[in-house]
Length: 253
Image (cartoon, rainbow, N blue to C red; front, side, top):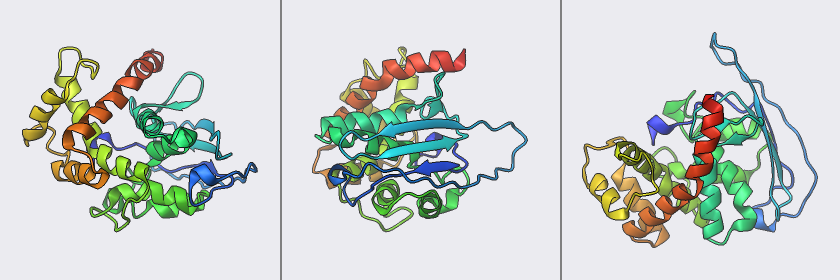
């Protein structure tokens, strides 16, 4: 998995899910239930809780997430106390592109929490996550969506939904793109082209922790060429770069 991009999330402290069905687009419940889990992190640093509320327009779901994670720019708390970052924005952007706009908030939260267990349980990544999410009140559709990006690597949960397949494919690829962007004079994906990224992809010494095999398998699972997957992922990262950069200015101030 993209170790250097893993979320620094100790554990969800509160996470409420209302009306989760097997498919987020088909859910219409509007009630909200709450569940809390205590996070006991062995640290001397002061921990702060960041809370985000996100409502799915079509699904009627409401999520409240408290975390002590600050792994900017991939996931961090902005000055308004909202959780923002690349991991959330990319999945939302691709959901919109793929015709799942009504589910964009759901998939954004999947992106936000897909590495929920990595920091504390790296050897049980995607194995410990169901326990943490169930304790917090998450239902099976969300848990499955979070965990299936580890299929064939840590777990045996084959991605089925189009967005599950996309998360599996882009999880490693975004790490490669991020590393490639940092090597560019612009430090940006705005001027990155697929041809340039392919050169980095072929250089196995570059960002060696990003599995080329998983990226290829992800493209095949989607029925896309490698070039198509790279292009769609670059476009998604471009769509959120300016907003994340602006949020980072306030975060670092």
